Amino acid sequence: MQSYSQGFARAYNLRWSGFARQVAPLILDFYAATPVGHKDRTVLDLCCGTGQLAIYFLEKGYRVVGLDLSKPMLDYAREHARPYIDAGQAAFVQGDASNFTFDERFGLVVSTYDALNHLEDEQALYRCFQCVSAVSDGYFIFDLNTRSGLRRWNNVYVDESDEDALIITHGMYDGASNKAWTRISGFVRLPNGLYERFEEIVFNTVFEMKKVSDLLHDAGWKNAYFARIQDLTTALDEPEKEGRVFVVASK
Image (cartoon, rainbow, N blue to C red; front, top):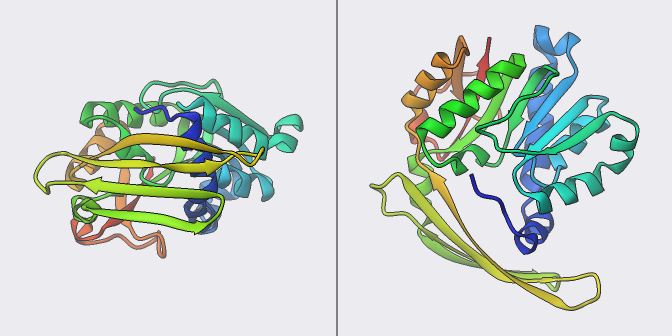
């Protein structure tokens, strides 16, 4: 799994943290309505990034542990969640999503913004599912870009919407291989007013949805289905036709 640089973490915190804030209320509403969610208010935010989803759950009174491989991402998450960390309600740990363990168990494990597409292959994804299964008897909710969604990556986009950053993304996917690539570069303004240049090449692995379901069952998740974020209770008949799917797994 990739570990991102300080410059990329700064750009991510500035430009891409909105996705977690958008989906967090919908995930919480779904989980809180389940029997497990009625009694267990503990969350593991897997690949937590700069911590926005974790903050939403913390604000609602949940105990949250965040795990991420990138130290710069975790630095932002800890900064955002400092009062909750000081109160013992939150912790942020550096670690690999395909190789981790915790002594405590969680009612909900969540991973957003196609973070698990950044695992290198099916073996790594399966190890991730096993690790999650070992620390949760509740729900595991995560999203993935599908092959259909990754076909849309063949473009160049320039974001110069304000003076704090200039970000250029160049996506590449041939439609046949199991990897899509994006080169992200640009400049982000520092607190002293100067600009820092950054460049990161990130990949998404293409996972077939049927295989994802099989791996979840093999790792101990008895129930698993694909849904849209707008309705996490309804299973999709043809998830491969979606650009992005949310996976809902439970014991």
